[in-house]
Length: 378
Image (cartoon, rainbow, N blue to C red):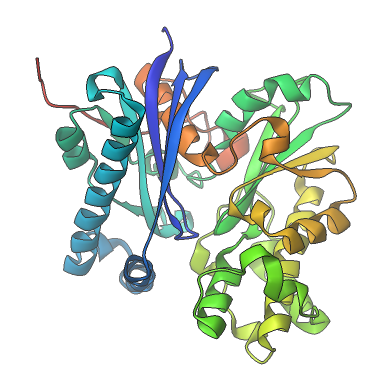
C-alpha cells in the first residue's frame, strides 16, 4: 500500500481537549508529518465529561443508552467535526485528499476485567458529515479477545523509534503521561512481534493532580508544577498510595482514571497534596521498571505531563537515567497520540494488528477498529 494522508483525533482522560493531526503513512512507517491543531475543552464541557464518567461508573454497560450520555456523545462528535474542518481549512486541504480519519472518541469507562470499555462519539455521523471514511471503536475487539484494550499507541511508538533505538546501547522507554500514564518498552534489536515491545499502564498520570487542582484552586491543572514545587511530599500518604493493588499488579494491565481517588491526600494542604500526587505519579512509573525485560537506558516523555517541570525532575530522580521530552527526539509531543490514531486507522484499513499480546495481553495480535464509509460523492 502506498502511503496515504490520514487524520487522527484524540481526546484523552486528562480532559484537556481534542487534538487533531495529519500524517502520511502506510501503517508501518511514517513518511511525513502534516499540520496539527488542538481545541481545549471549556469549563462546561469538562464538567459534563466528569459527570458522565461518574454516571458511567454507576451504570456500567447500560451507560451506552443513557440519554445524558447520548446527548453528550452527539455534542462531542460535533465538536470533533468542527476541529477537523478548521484544521483542513487552515491547511488548504480538501476532504477528498484525506483517506481516513482515526476517531478515538472520549473514554468514559474502561473495565476490561469485565469485558467492557466505553468510548463515546458517533463515528458514522462523523464520516457522513465530513465526507471522509472514519475508523473508530479501536478498543472493543481487543477487549473481546480477553485483552486489556490498552495501551494502543505502542505500535506507533515503535514506528517512530526505529531511528532512535538503533543508536542506543540498550532499550528505550517511551512514556506517555496523560490522565493515566503508560510505558512502551522498545528494543528493536529483538523481534518486534515477540520480545521487542512491551507496554502497559503504570498508574496515574496527570488525572489525580488535575482533580486536586480543580478541587482546591478551581483551575484544571498545576500549571508549570508550581503548586507541587511549593509543597512537601507526605511520606505516609505516598506509601499508602503506592500500596494500591492497581500499582502492585503485574502487566498486562490498563487502568481507568477512576481507579484512583483523592481520599489519601484529603487532609493535606493544597501544595503538599500536589507534591504528594506528583510524587505518586513519578514513583509508580519508576516501580514499573521491575516489570520490564531490561531497564531502559533512556526515557522519552510524551503527553501533557512533560510540561510539568516538577514532575519531570521527580522522574529524573526516580529513574536515574536521561529523561527527556518528546521534542528532544524530534517528535511532536502534543500531537503524538492523535497521530497514533491516524496510524492505527491505516493499519485497520490494511488488516494489520493494532495490538499485540505483549502490549494488551490479548492471546494473539488483534485487529481492531470499525470502518464507517464517507458519502459516495462524485
